[in-house]
Amino acid sequence: MGRVYNFSAGPAVLPEEVLKEAAAEMLDYKGTGMSVMEMSHRSPEFQQIIDEAEQDLRDLMKIPDNYKVLFLQGGASQQFAMIPMNLMKNRVADYIVTGQWAKKAYQEAQKYGKVNKIASSEDKTFSYIPDCSDLPVSPDADYVYICENNTIYGTKFKQLPNTKGKTLVADVSSCFLSEPVDVSKYGIIYGGVQKNIGPAGMVIVIIREDLITEDVLPGTPTMLTYKTHADAGSLYNTPNSYCIYICGKVFKWLKAMGGLEEMKRRNEEKAKILYDFLDQSSLFKGTVEPASRSLMNVPFVTGDKDLDAKFVKEAKAAGLVNLKGHRTVGGMRASIYNAMPKEGVEALVAFMKKFEEENA
Ligand SMILES: *Cc1c(COP(=O)(O)O)cnc(C)c1O
Image (cartoon, rainbow, N blue to C red):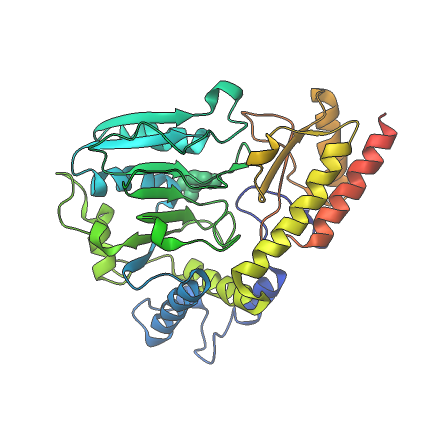
């Protein structure tokens, strides 16, 4: 079987060019006689890989000099604890709960202090982003937390919340590098790379330098202190070296494509193809309020569970895979990340049209 169109939410599709390059370098990385997986993380070859990866990411996101870039393990989920352990000087934080991942972060933070849910969209199954222009931000909050793109529900913040001067912390796992961002508006931007960047097993944390201190909660492990990793250039211990290597290749791929402005244009174009179809379909319908729609994750349903299951099965047979919705939502979800070509979305819509006719 050849390559399929993989609509998985994560681990997810990677650029074919990157996979081919990695394959070509597998046995002998640039004359070293070994693969990157077999290489010391203290070698000059690897130092160059990690330095270039960081620089390319800085170029893509225009990351200001007073921010550090950390390549860490433990996934996005580990940040749910690491953030409060490092940032909760007053032991107070405000959370905006717009989905399962924000909720998990909110629940984890409760282990470390007083955590306020200052807005939520749970009343309508997280199908929208609440108005965050004038929220009751706590005067002593150490930070305000959001999940910027809700992978499971398919919503995205189109405007950042008004944090009333408090530090903004954002989980961008599923919209990382999908469009330009103004890094200076955030204290921390972080995300697991397995959604829109690279292989599973790593999280990238972009953190403003003043938030990196030794003044962390008592008992915070060395490995969960940002300062440990910032001081060591993400090489305090053995990092996920192969993942850093592949992410570095993806950064170069993004630069060659024209950077994040161009990715935004492409992502808007791709998402429009799918949303336009959903908006006029007699069988399928999107589950998200149009104003909150994600460019990356597009959930939709037929309204009939058996028909949904039939669709997922037949789509798979047609080479359109991983379209089953998250277990908590049901229906379908198409994740159309940076590496999903427009042709993949067009093939999906053509298949949906055909399915609609056959099942009218
Ligand atoms: C997938 C995901 C996570 C969890 O990532 P792990 O790396 O598995 O811990 C957290 N937040 C968001 C928005 C996600 O999409």
